[in-house]
Length: 244
Image (cartoon, rainbow, N blue to C red; front, side):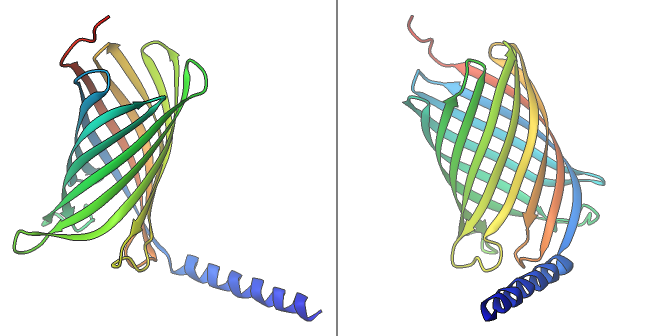
């Protein structure tokens, strides 16, 4: 009887604390438009350079949010596995409020390590796994950069190609913060979305998609709920033709 009472009190205590957190939580809703250029520079069968350039804007009202450049040196390991090392440069417009027009920019550098696996299910259906470790350095007032924290990312993506030039995609990606400066927001954000990629040419095409980004702020209570439309141009260039 005493054990059941203790369990009941424990369940009640957890429930009250859960509803208290929910009641205190503040969610800010925002709409964004991302435009992106994605280049793959294939050096040979095993090595390639990947370059991505993103312009990210609030759409309602219109204002800059981020400008991002990401460069990777990629190596194919075989049997669906790849690894890469890269560097991301970010210009973040702050504060994160599109109503504020008198904003300022903060620069960030992120060395990145990547491990990926392409898992075939059928000839037309694949599951992609991608692991990233990002090391975040923020610009200081004296123009130097100071390490802030490490961010771990895992992305699960489903790809289905119903016809030769069209690929349907759906993904879910989770971000976790690691470091001494992280107190409340170990969970950084979750992104979930879907897109359609159309490649009218072998080396040139485009992709249109939607995704939701649910991001926790540093205080652990406030969140951003962002709905984004993304338009991407895909371009592949082969430096050297593979021998047949």
